[in-house]
Image (tube, rainbow, N blue to C red; front, side, top):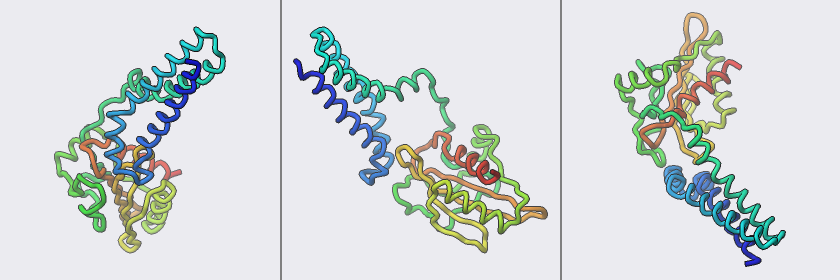
Amino acid sequence: MKHLGKIALLVAVLGALAAVLIVFGARLGLWQPITGFGFYRSYFNPLAMIVTAVGVIALVIHILRKERGGMLSAGAATLVGLVLLAPMVHAALNPTPRAAPIHDISTDTTNPPAFVVLDETREGASNTLDYGGQELADAQAAAYPDIAPLQTDLSADAAYARALTVALDMGWTIVAEDAKARRFEAVARTSVFFFADDVVVAVTAQDEGSRVDMRGVSRVGRSDQGVNAARIRDFQQKFGA
């Protein structure tokens, strides 16, 4: 029993490593993002509870036996378990509002920017790049009424150059550029689970200045959990900064 704390700490270390693999396995190339997300939904919380339970049991036993070394190891194991439990506790205390069941967001729902280079063969994609028409436009207007084209005083060429710079600063992978048409396509990935979203940005000259349109489409999932709308807002804010 005197080694119970060390055993609990070993369980905690292995549990933490497993948690890291679940969250970042797709980034490491071990599996597709949707697979890692499935692992998270199925195993992350049970894993956290097991690590915490083993740590608490070991801690109580060592406290009763007044074994200081065991207490330290078991305490550390318990702390790791509590850290792993934090996402579940946070979600329970601050539930995230259910996002609209859409994954294709555009600043222009009447004439959404089309993808020319990226197509249905892109890796891991189950969602189409074809726009969903008026039904999708109405759903977006209800869920994200603030999403609109970016109007700028910059010339079209300057706005295009600025948009490309912002995209690169945001870590997007540029797939295709067309400076003459002032449009580019890119892949943006989420920091957690490494989900891929396909993005197209198009700049249009106007009488005074220019207009920047952007469209983001998630490769998998009926809902993008608001990621594409948030990315558009972030892009527009950085563009004007």
